[in-house]
Image (tube, rainbow, N blue to C red; front, side, top):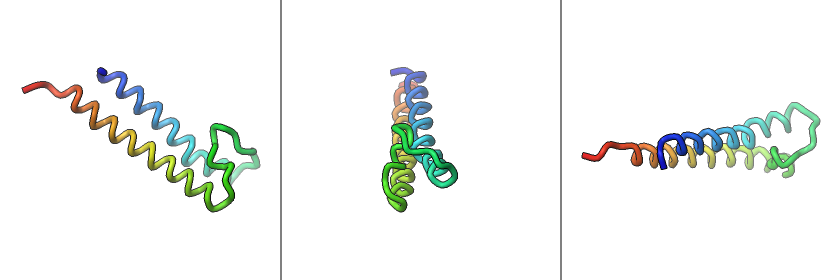
Length: 79
């Protein structure tokens, strides 16, 4: 894979991580909207929904870190 595919994967992972993490918490805390597929953590009861949202954001961060490491290895110049 070239640099563009890794960057696209990181961007999509970032968007999903932000939406399932902080945005789900904001929807739960400050709006009366019902949970949807896009805010899946909000289907859980009160204390667990926040933990699930933080876990989703942390998992997205870990995937982004792994993609960045692989991107650097893939685009490194051979010696």
